Length: 554
Image (tube, rainbow, N blue to C red; front, side, top):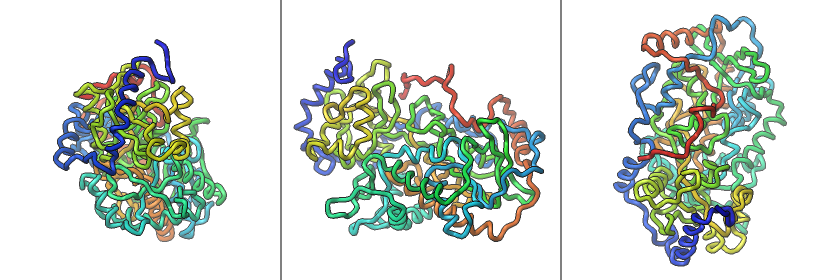
């Protein structure tokens, strides 16, 4: 089969149909006439097609604070796994690291927490960052689309609050959402002070874009390198301040003391295979999400270390989890070519750009700025029920994101200027997104739920804080574009500040791993017999764990 501009001949036949309908579709941009679904229609499509509702995908967890709650099978398996350590083999009398604050994870939330702990009076040398991979390796760095905040005169935190609650199905914790939206404008100013170069209009004002579920343009971007640009500045600040960082050293178990407080963690050096004892008066979990569990066999946008470590560690010390029966499938993950399947095709292509989502005949079947869960459901319906998707040579299905419309709407060169990362990604595989559309399908993107926290980023166990994707409650059952990065800095800041206040007034007792012994006893009493161990640290792609594109969605 010959290739033409990166696509097989039979796929190019569909592209020709897309091209023929393009002029007519220019009259149906999202700001003009193509309607959004009603609330009733949205509920119907979600329950019929969204993977969260797929029969057999979940079961009830049998141990721990959420015993009896419905969770994805893969998550329940992790929570019902044996710990990696045997407490009898860990010497707690020798403390290798003794910081005031231990931060586990080095994405946007962890780095923000470190900076604001220092701002609150904790010297850099009294903070320790322990991270699984290299400093900054995280979903935070891979983020493309932007960060929401109500900075425009015609916008307000109240409107942002309503958009966020509505996008989350009103399952969000309203107090957490209030913190998110009211802190938002300040956090944008703080990031600019650090040196983040947000896109600006010709008159110098901040440029903002629509995101799915937004009633107003509120998303601030740095072209389509937004996460990388913000992480560049945060990493520089942390490194310049001299905060100690342990790379390739994840936490494999939290420590507690005999007063019932979290008191640090057992760390594991992945290179030397040694464990370290890190004692701390306050511990902040910023370990990110679970994309590399590949729930239901979905490809993922997530970085290599996103294996749900944080929820496992927190659960074993008694933290309650919220909304763990729902995850976000980003509607536009790459479906072709094979080498980049699952990688993110930013929502900004649809928001600022105006690229439409069309089926194999070039027909619009959904507004491209529906909330992510709704749009993902509509794409799954189009591919699997209506059979109007395009099938790739490996058997994956997808619909077209009509990227050439961006230059048609905004002028020649607009795509290369606003989306250099997307242009380069596809160009490596012989596809020019200014000339041809790109094939997309929902991809596992974000852990909507997680550890329950309050407005101070405190968990329900003393001494343990959490921020970012590892937590739940902010987004409800569906996250809006740009609210993840806002969550990272808002609650990273709150975690750092409140942890700093805690260490000034508490003392630690005798270190213990008794909670691990109790957890093993719970597994035995529940009749759970397994050789699984968690956290898994890195994904395993051998044998049965190999990812198949033959998804059985319906």
